[in-house]
Image 1 (cartoon, helix red, strand yellow):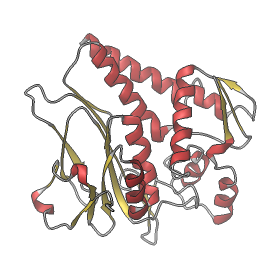
Image 2 (cartoon, rainbow, N blue to C red):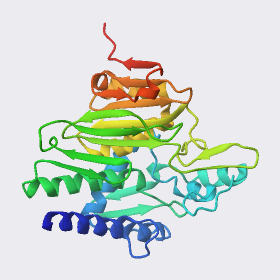
Image 3 (cartoon, one colour):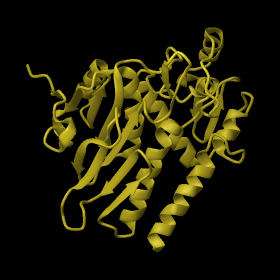
Image 4 (cartoon, rainbow, N blue to C red):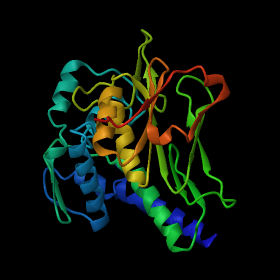
Length: 296
């Protein structure tokens, strides 16, 4: 109970520190700095640096400065709307992770730029909680932060943890992924979306290059790796990339596994998951493609 209480307090402290809407948070202070330098904690500096590194590695498919565009669509407020092209173009002019200038524990962003670390913070917090539990001698645990699952070791009986992968097209799970001592993070268009009067669906994962919902042919991305923060960042970035580019990215990195659900219902998964992912009975007719490292 004491360990669980400490973990909960850690999560609440990070929420206060990194919330984009809390006037007392460090992120709020950065976003309302009017272009002035802001002194931040070392922990926040580390998180921002990680986000910048992942943005660079994914060629901007992940970009923490997309927040004003998300707001224009209403995804941060719940007042959904399709912004006009002029609004998107104007806001996009300030969307570029390279507008964040971090030096030691000081950060400066250009006037008009706003950041939101939501695409990496939850995974980062999951890693911290897992570390805290391990430091307290916990050898078997499952941490579920809603779409972000972190596992320590195996189940107490030694069997693998069974993580359900949600079906993007219907209720229930598409299948089950068996893992040990890993993080599993899923990003999907079904998490937050709205439909306009014409029946068009718009989801919250935006392409930083266009300002519109990512339309690369994916409806769900699940990433499994040793670090939750990397899973968190990649699940968003790979969704933006689309299946072909995501497969190329995996081949170039290779330090994570992924499961992609395409808009047509097909499934692509990396060969590291080929023997650990099992489709649900009602989904066994789906076509599954195993992504492998190219051999010479």
